[in-house]
Every structure is written in structure tokens, then in C-alpha cells.
Length: 488
Image 1 (cartoon, rainbow, N blue to C red):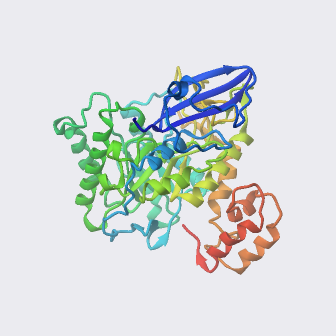
Image 2 (image 1 turned 120 degrees about the horizontal axis):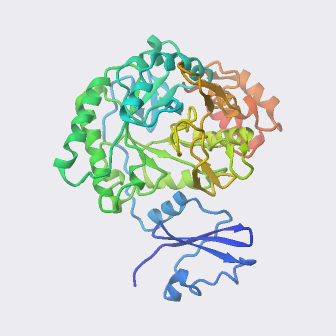
Image 3 (image 1 turned 90 degrees about the vertical axis):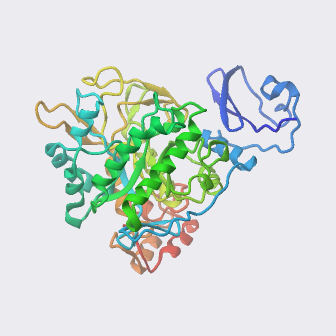
């Protein structure tokens, strides 16, 4: 009899229950069950419906969760239960350059570094995502002059791009000669349509472009990491996917060879954790010895539950959250809900800060090209039960809204999420006074914050257990940082 991993998740809905089915970690179907549903242990009869193979199963383990499992949790449940993972620390020697991964921690210029950043793709209103236009947005002096003060006001220390800039002008401005620098995770776009990743002749042009990309930027002091692709894992065919991961490892090997001992880390940018960290897809740690860390575009809603705990079982590589947040448009009421966007962005960040190398919020500013016409602010997107309104409006994700400014750069107006996340980014864990270390002055501030809502500086510095209040359960986190430097 074949071993199968079966998960059914459900959610109350108007007039009935939404039900999703996953087999061996992958989504396979949805059903709507009309009428009231009594989900007690007696009524959840395994093997009684077609969802469980008409009863032709043997159950050797049964677990119930009191929340709707995230797709990534379901996937990780399968990988761990089926023992398809091979966690293994990197065998790469620690870089001798300014950016290093040391014992799973990211260091920049010898100090612990938590990525506090934004996905940066400021395509102007009226412009579509052509390669030439996208490159131009990273090289426009007027756009750079508009955005630098806003990025500093966010207290961001990192941006993430999706494609390379045309030259070093953006990096030069961000790095600012090393004074209050903002670093860049430079994205290298990996196409998938028409590419046979199992055929070296098909991937040779991509590899050549990557070599030129690394050589162009490898010596810039504002470089933080190389970003490989963006969500190729969910856009590529099942047969091509293992070869794609192997190709990413090949690119990482090339980057290491071109840079030598002072290499910058490489990161595969995955959609969630799906297809990552498993022998089935050649994406486990043993199969990817040259990749330095995983990037995950992670949209986990209000509570990630076991997501991070599962991932720590699957891979020993450090995790960087390369996208997070929600959009600013309430699709249910046809209006913006800035306070809701801010609350979700902040809460997701607090989980990220404790469980990953940091993150880049999606996104810096709205992009009007994503639905219908790039000259209008449209409302298209997709349904998702991880957003409070059940929908993701693709053109409304920005921390900043944009409006037309004629011949000049679009006017960028911060939303509440910008200001609230700026407070988060300004305070490293435990560092209430944001002076670069955690000392007795910060401990005194913690005592004043005890019993208070986890808001503002109290929340950003002291909410180690994300539950909405500063309590004694947060004390071990504060003590753990006492007399130590705060991360950059």
C-alpha cells in the first residue's frame, strides 16, 4: 500500500464551509460544503468520504490543528513526515569580505546585521514592465533623489531589486560613501518560458548574463547579496523544477568563483517554502551546497503559527524573508484600510525579526501597471484567505501611494504602514532608545512598558512573544540582548 500524506483544511464561510485538500504536501482540490458543519471528533470520520480515497487507507498518525494551516505548513508537514529533507550546514568557508554569514547570522562590516528593507520597483505611472523601462527606473537621478530621503525616513538598511540596475548610480547614492548606508540585494531575473534547465545549451545565455552581472557589481561596497530569480518555483513545470534548483546552485558556484574568498551570499528567491528543502525536487541542503541562504516571499496572514518551526527542521541554511505584508485596499468595502495594512505589516515583521535574517516588505510604492492599464489605478488581483478582506489587489501594495506629477517623478505619499514600520525598523530587539546597544536604560524602559499594549517603541523593542502586550513572557528576550550590540 502506498504511503500518502493527506491534509484537509477548512474555514467557515457564508452558508457553509470551505474545504481544501492536499496530497503529499501539494494542493489538489477545493470543495464548498453547504449548510452547518459540526466538526467534532465523532463527525470527522476518516475514510468516510472520497477525500480520503473512499476509505481505502490505513491511518498511522492523526493530528488536529485549531487553525487553518498555511499552504507552507502543509508542505513542510509532508517533507518532515516523509523524511524527504536533509538539513546540512553550508560547507562554504566564511567569506573574507564585508558581508558574511557566520554561524547562521548575517554580519556586515563585522557587526550583526538584520535586513530591514523594502522591495524596490518604482515603475512610473503609465509605464509597463519592459526591460528598458525597468532599468531606467533604477537609473533616473530624479527618482533616486525623491526616494533616498523616504528610504532613510523608513530607517531601511536594505532594498531588494528584481532586475539589475543599468549602472552603479543607484548603489552609489544608497551607499553614500559608507555614511548611513543602505545596501542592495541585487536581483537577477531568471526566465522560465522556453528554457530547458536540464539542457546546458538552453541555459548558457542566462549563465553568460549572470557572469556579466556579477562582474559588473561584485566590487561595489553597497552590495549585500545576489538574488536568484523570483518565484520561479511556482511558475515552472514539475519536470523542469528540479533542474531549475540545480541551475541556481550552478549560478551560486559561479558567483563564488568570480568573487573568490570575499564572496557575497547568494539567495534563491522562492514563493513561500513550497518545493524547497526536499530531495524530491533536488532542493535539499545536500543538493544545493553552493547556495548560501533561502529567500522566501512569505505571506502568512496574521499568524504564521508553526511555519518557522517547520522550516528550521527542513533546512539548516539561513532564511531571509524577501517579501511580506498585505495590500492597502479593502476589496470588501471598496476603500483603503491603511490601519489594517499597517497592523499586518508590523505584526508580520515582528515574527520575521525573531525567526529570520530579516525581511524586505512588499513593497516600497504602488505599481499601476499590474492590472489593465498602467495609466489607471485598478483593482484586479486574486483571492486569498490570508488577507482580512479575502483579496489581494495587485496595484495597492505600496508603503507609499503614487500620483501623477506630469513630467516630473510621481509624487510618493506615505501611508500609515510606512510610518509604523519605520518605528519597527528604528528599534533593534531590546534597544528601546535606539542607541546601538541594549543596556540598563533599555531594561528600565522595559519595566515601564510592562503591561502596556505592544505598540510604538515598546512593541518594536520588547514584543518577543507576539501577543499584543508587553509581559513577563517577553523578559527572556530582553535579557538575552542585554550588554550586547544591537544589530545594524
